[in-house]
Image (tube, rainbow, N blue to C red; front, top):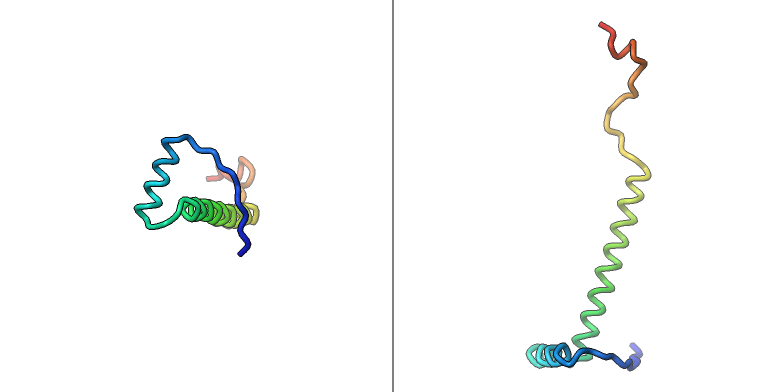
Amino acid sequence: MEMQNITLSLPKPTLLKVKLLAVQRHSSVSRLLTQAIEKMLEEETDFETARKRQVALLEKGFRLGFRKPGNRDELHER
């Protein structure tokens, strides 16, 4: 996979925490951030797929066994 460098600005305290986390995980800051971004993109894709599936179900509708009520006289017929 071809890689491309970017410039990223982070607040100093955040950068220090990220560097510490990378060391604790025996990783690099670059790899750590790549994994986090890939996870976000995967979750977004999964959410969008699920949303489309649910919208399609709602548009199709569900048959719940109800019948259309008749007129007032039929409803109150004794």
